[in-house]
Structure formats: structure tokens, C-alpha cells
Image (cartoon, rainbow over all chains, first blue to last red; front, side, top):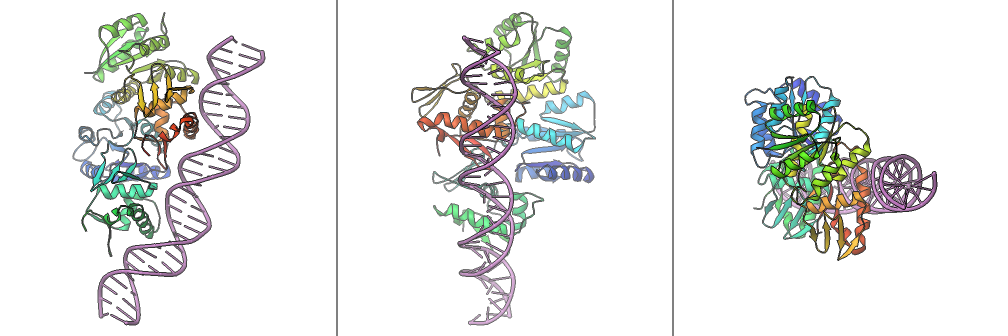
Length: 228
Length: 228
DNA sequence: CAGCAATGTTACAATAATGTGACAATGGCC
DNA sequence: GGCCATTGTCACATTATTGTAACATTGCTG
């Protein structure tokens, strides 16, 4: 499932975009300014960023520069949203490293078309590094998990769940939060579904006793931690 | 600073391109025909070549072939400029070894975007050295594949697919990404087409059990890897 | 320890993703 | 022009995944 981060301060436009994205089958997160955007990117790297040129505080251009300068986010596909029409601005945005831009006003159809085009172009995932905890190793790029060198087979949701946990260790997440961040916003499923997937993930990790990393916090949620 | 060689016989188009390139911060050289282009490449190798399909004398296609056949220029990123719209020409250009093509008329923005995309991609491009994994051997220049010394016959698409995979092992690629990078951008085919070609490639490799190198990652795409 | 809420566990049916074979269109080649 | 290889697409088969419900177990509170 493709996840898109929408950085836009106008709630009306944000909603419109959100609706279009949902229609098109994308998951998405929202950010009202550059700071929120950076936080969102850090906590859960999206597959693509839709970025308004005009933002309160740090401008869209600054944000692009910032994202491009960081190793991890350097390859993140970015589409700029801009009301400006001057060629110099366009070139400017592209020079900074945006992969494409869409001029307001735009139709949802156009937006989706651009997104698909850029996504197809983009060179795989955000240059994510493998993560390891005590011999439990996960490679986001290769989509692989190893326990003490032995490859494990995980179903897609199990993989995403483990990936999320390993990216955010030592933190408790409620079922609702997990649904939001692993399943995606706007996905409507029972909260107990999380329990079942936790169970499945634990089962998959149980062979080498790595299931102990997935811990239940009664009354709150679940946590990934190498400690007890 | 990135240097681009523009091979185009029409002075008007050349100027337009030159202006766009300058605006975008590229340096560039110009050539009016294939001979000038070869001379320019020899004297001052560019980072990328923008090449008109229709040239007086040696055609653009011939020039691509020529550049690809020379050791030093074999990996040079090439973008074709073409007025033709026929699907067969596109395939042709990409088969010959162009990295992308832009159909006239094009906007400066589009051109720059394509250039940036190709440049970003080409950084990772592996040379024209033969690649081998556990007895599966592929020669990009000779267009040859051997399994334990025995030559395999692959259809062109199968070969490109395998070549791409072997150049990027242990990474998962979505169907869309494979279409972009093996078929070429702007080629519009069903994503399921990838499945069929994967199947054909596996079949071709199955004799020596090398089909296990092509792995399905459910919900995501495919991966080439010698491991399981 | 009873009673209750939260979580673990299992089974299952619906759905989604992928594998597979066939076919028609296309273009190269003689 | 006729033959052949290649290719994209479809229809259908097969398999994996997923959400849910139902029941079991655990742990807490008084």
C-alpha cells in the first residue's frame, strides 16, 4: 500500500486532496506545516510527498532542500503544489529536487495521474537501512527478515507491522494507532484484528524466541522491545 | 557541474533546449550531426546525451548503437528526442539502449524533469561488465546468458529483465518499477504483463534450477537473489 | 474466589494476489 | 507474401492473506 504525505496548510485543499487520494486507493498522512512534515517523515517515511509551495514558517522550497540533504530522505519522491505559473518557479522547484509539480487549480484526476507517474519513476523505496536488534534483522529494501541469519517468511501485513515496530522500538502503541500507521488511515477494521496479527507475527518469530520482543501492555497496546 | 551534449540538427530547437538547460543550471555542448557528436564525446565526455532521432547522415539510432558498443561510452545516459509517436519506435529506442525518450513537442519543464530522473538513475548503473551469480552468467555487451556454461536463449524482454535483476540483486521491485526500468517509462502496458514475463524468464532458467533466483514477494513485487 | 474485562487462540470464509496457458497482433526475416 | 519469434492481454486456476467471530485463557479488582 502506497503512503503519501500531504503537506498543506489550507484545510479545505487538504481535505480535497485527501478525498482524491482515498478514492484512488492511497493511504495518506497530513501535515499542516514543514515541522509537522519533518516529524511525519521521520516517524513514518511515506512513499511520496505532496508539498505545497507556500507554507507558514519554513517554505516548501526549504523543506525540499532539507529533505534532499538528508541521506534517508534524499530519494523521496516529491510533488510540489503551486499556484505560481512562472517558468522560473517551475524550474526552481525542479532544480531543488522536486520530481514534479502540479499547478493550482488542479483536478483530482490530474493529481492522481501525476502521482502515479512519479511513483513509477521513483527508484524504489526511501533509501532505508536495514534494522537489527539482537540478531533479528529486517531489510526494508529487500523485504526480508532474518532471525539469526535464517530467513523468515512473513505475510505482507506481518512484515509491515514488524517494520513499524522495529522502526519505533520501546514505545507502546494502542490498537488504534497501529491501525492508523500500519494499516493506514481510513481503513476500517475491528481493533481486535490487531491482536490477531500480533499473534501471527509472534508465531512467525517464535522459532528463535524472538516473539518475546513483541510485548503486550495490558489496557494500552503493544510494544516492541528487546528488554523485558 | 553536470554537462549535457545536445545532438540536434535544427538550430531553433537546439537553442530552445540550450536555454532550458542553462536555466536549469546545466552546462551543455552542441552537435549538429552524429559525426560532431562522436567528436564531442571523444574530446569531452558529457554526463548525458540528448539525442534527436532524426539526424542528417548517421541516424540517432545508429549513434546510440555506436555509443553503446564502445567500452567507454557504453554506460552513458541517453535521452532520445523524437517526433514520432508510434509505439514501435519507442520500443526500438529503448531496445537500442536509450535510457528514456521525450516526444516532441515537449515543454522545457518536462525535459528537465526527465534529465534529472535519468541522471539520478544512472548513478547506480552498473557498467558493462559481465555479471555472475553462482554459475548464472550474463554478458550485457554480448547479450548472452549462460547457466553453468550452457548458453541460454532469451527473448529480448527476458534478457533485459534478467539483466536489470542481476544488476540490482536483493532488492524488491514493484511491477510498476519494473515496467519503468525494463520496459521504459511512458510505455503503457498492464502491470500483470510483468507477471507473464517473470513466468517466461523463470521457465527459461528452470533447466538448471536457476528459476529460484527470481523470487515473488507477495503484495510487493519481485526480487532477484541467490539466497532464499 | 467470583466476576469482569482484556487478551490469546483457533477456525473459517471471503478476498486478493499470483501462476499459468492460450491467443491474437505485431514485426522481423527470408 | 509467408513463416516464425516475440509480446501483451485475457481467462481461468491456484494459492496466500486477511478480517472476523467464537471460544479460551489470563489477570485484575474487590
